[in-house]
Image (cartoon, rainbow, N blue to C red; front, side, top):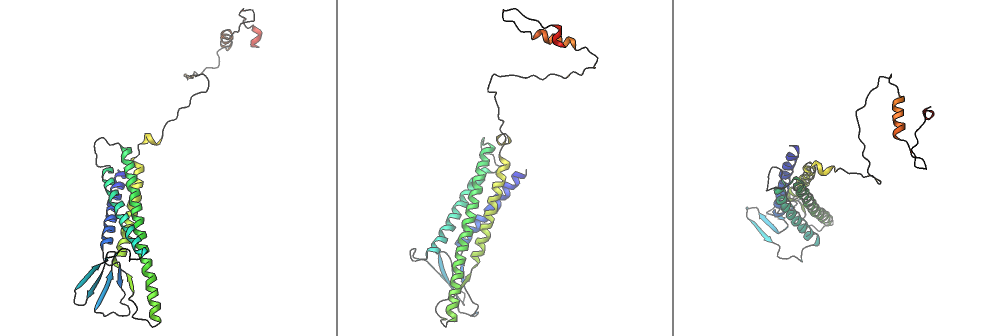
Length: 259
């Protein structure tokens, strides 16, 4: 029961993470204009991965997509690629995880196959979460670098050179979504261990003797009273193990052999 709960919870958490990655990638507020020095402005600018927008004080918003790919910075394109890879892996992991759920029976699928599919989906979720976290962190690093460069230019008297941008809401959504996908993938990997059949975990190993096969049979232990004579048992054992002499005659032990 705990394995099923862990698997279902991992599926739900991973689904939320993948949905958050899609929302974060589609959002336009990856970077917003810093209004620290100018709180009252007629124009507010913010940018996303796919387009830049301008919102006027009247409430009118105009967005313009990026018409070029080669003209964008290399790190910006890397962030795009990381987010797309994370979304694709997350969606594939969801499809695999649906068929791997223990509460869903498809034909005569064995538990070992479900365990492998659960492990595969968990690895996909982990990679998707790492891609999302890495992409958002790289974009945040770009914002921090540009912010301090713009601040240094402002202190040098060049206030109208360029606007300063700070973190947008899409970055926080991306960090949370990547963390959820990562946690969901770890839960799926933990649930995989409970789906593996016990007979496949511990396989019996048989050892054969190098020489002739010798079978040992254990019989019941008979407790003696201590008063039975032992000479009869010794005599019987002596006569049964008698060896032949060199001339072919059978030699019997004498009474002096038992002393």
